[in-house]
Structures are given as structure tokens and as C-alpha cells.
Length: 226
Image 1 (cartoon, rainbow, N blue to C red):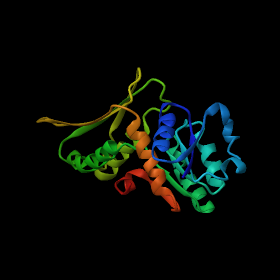
Image 2: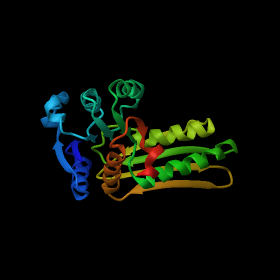
Image 3: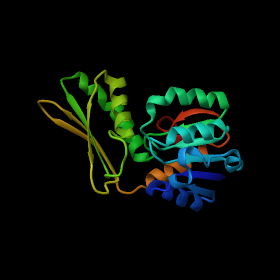
Image 4: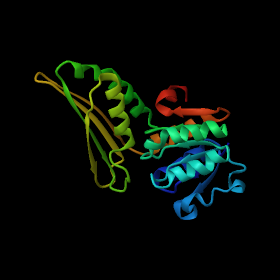
């Protein structure tokens, strides 16, 4: 496939590397080359099969509007824009595009999502809980999209809203922890990312899965299929 990678940061660059390793043609476009999605013209997008976005919360919506508006398929790993999910869903339907987003493309994190859904029921039995997340100091959004997704999964499963505590320090790739506490014991569910390669591989596999499909998809619902 012909993949357009939006974002020259650590994850975007690694996505391009993984895509090339998997035999795809790639074009990498950084923020300086694409202010306010100005570079995403019809000509630039003409040969693109799927655009993959790992940019910033400030840039992603304009990139989505340009790519989806041109009827192009898109995988979005950027977080911090989920208050506009319904608007994007309508844009995807209007333009007949395929769109897949994810708070986290790591297989391990998606297993944590499932574990959190199962564990949430214990909050009905005299347990309290908290969510902690830790990332590198350059991360733009806090709390992380992954932590917000964990919070929503637990809320939907238990009716309980857990507080999120965020830390930004050094070059931490990512840590997410759920702590469930009672008078008798404490349960810890924790995922620590050792490198960004898991995110990159998941995003490329998501793009491969999306090819030829139309509709609006969440990676946490389809990751086993990839």
C-alpha cells in the first residue's frame, strides 16, 4: 500500500520504518511541512491508500478534515480530540471513508482494557480505585487518551468514576496502572511500555486491516482481527 505518515516525532518515524519493513511505500510529512493541513491537497493525497496520524491534538482535526474530506482512509493514533468524535464520525459517513482510531495500538494495552472491564465489577463490593499514568515530558495531552479510555471502560462496567493522576517526566514511554483497594487487600493492574515499536506495529497492522473497508472503527474493538 501507499501510506502517508503524518508526524515526524518518535512514534511517527517508527511507524514509517515498520511500514517499509512490511513492504509498504511510505511518505512522511512533519508539522513544519504541513501547517494547518495545508500540504494535504488533492494532488498530495491522490495516490495515498491510508493516512496514519501521530501528530498533536492541535493538528489532528485539520488533518482528519483534509484526508477524510478527500475520501481517504485514515488511522489516527493521536489522542486529545475525543470530544469531537461524533463530528468526525459524521464526516466519515458523509465521505464514504474508512476511519480507525485508537487510544493505544499496543496489544498489551488492549489486553489491559479487557482486564479492566472484568475487574471493574469488584468496585460494587467495598473496593475503591484510582488510575495512574506516566509519560514522557513532551506528551501534549494529560490525562492520556489511554487513561481516559480505561476510565470510560470501568465507568461503563461499574458505574464508578475513577480519578486519574498523570505524571510527565523524562523519556518515559508509557505506564498505566489501575489500583483497586479494600480493607482486606489491594489489586494492581499495570502495563509498562518498553518501546514505541508496539504502537508502531499496531498502527501499521490497523492500516492493513482498514484497506478496502468503509466505516468508523475503534482499535480496541477490532485488534484481535489484525
